[in-house]
Amino acid sequence: MQAQNRSRHIALSITLAALLLPLNAAWAKSDKEIQEDALKARELQKGMDHSMPMDDPALGKFRGVFYGYLPCNEEGCTGLKMTLSLNQKHRYLLVIQAAKASNRETFEKGRYEWDEQSGKVTLTPNKEGAAPRRLSVKDDSTLVYLRSDGSAYMGDQEPYLMKRTDVANNRDMHIH
Image 1: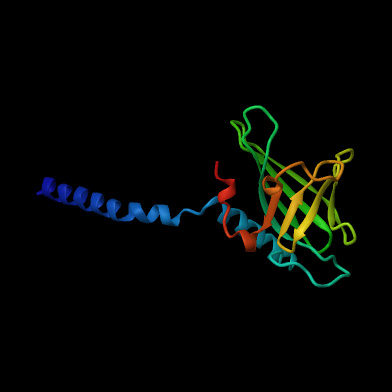
Image 2: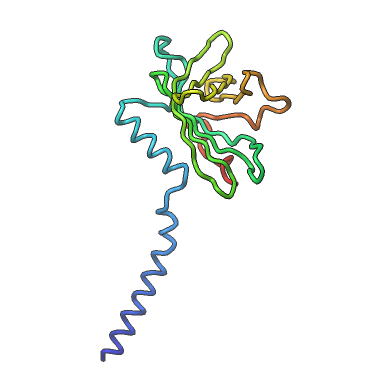
């Protein structure tokens, strides 16, 4: 009798596990969903919405969360995953992860300035001595990463584009 109950228990456990196994993959959050959840939680704490550009000229004309997969010059690196968050108080957070064996993320915080005449955004890091970064505004949902002197990279600009999250809708460009 005990052997029969034990067999039923094992059979029931295996059946239940087999039924729940496909659901497990559906329950797992993607990298994009996890990052977006974290950014949304931060925005809610601060009372901000980074998903759309701002119309109030006093606070800055451009903000949002942008994703890009930019070229990498390091050996063994296939690209740089970049997430840039521009907020309404002219503050930014840049997360960079190299697509290579040691893919540690680096974080950079600072202030940004929008120059309407040149159509460029300058990121000035909080870290003393760190060089500013420059991007140009292609349109209200796309930034183009520029060289350190503020000039565009030669050739096709597509590898240097950073798209706002509500336009990109996915991070296929980040899968390597």
